[in-house]
Amino acid sequence: GRASVLLIDSETCGVGLGLLVQAAASAAKKGASLAEINHLVRGLTSRVYMLLCLHDLIYLSQGGHLDPAQAIVGEMLSIAPLYLLEYGKLFPMHKVRSQHHLLDMLQEFIGEFTAIQHIALVRGIMPFEQEARTLKERVSRDFPRVSFSEHLLNSEMATIFGPRCLGLVVLEG
Image (cartoon, rainbow, N blue to C red; front, side, top):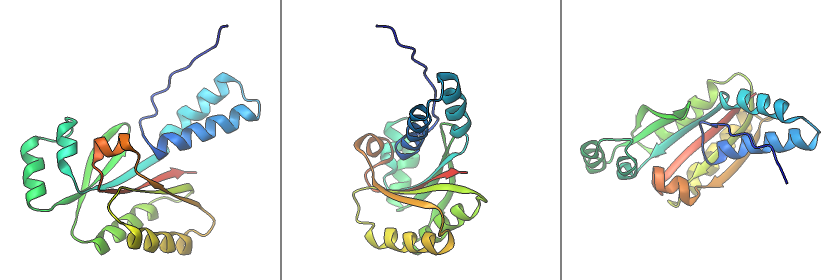
């Protein structure tokens, strides 16, 4: 049979993409037309923000997102940069000095939004148990009505960002 297929550049990945898919599926379940779902998802793409702390810069280099020399020097100096994934591109934001500084930077990132619909914590294989627990406590204290989820980094994102990645996805309301 025939089916209408519509491609949309989500300009995000992983959990951010999942949030868009959930919104589209919810709208479809409620009987929205393809045009309405298209309009909804295109509107939501500009409201999904992802901040990532990357401990393995060589993965960005292998993907062509960072000069190999920068990746080698960054790894030698144990630099852990924060990158913002926005409009489908990575933007370097800050360098993290410690795990406590990382939590403060993530909290500050969340605090920049006035209306948050969902916050998702994304973490790689490195045991970020304490950081995840602390961040979850801070979010539940400061944003008690915002839904929060925690996700392990999938293999596709680990290939791009490295397995020792910690980040947040915010869906602005």
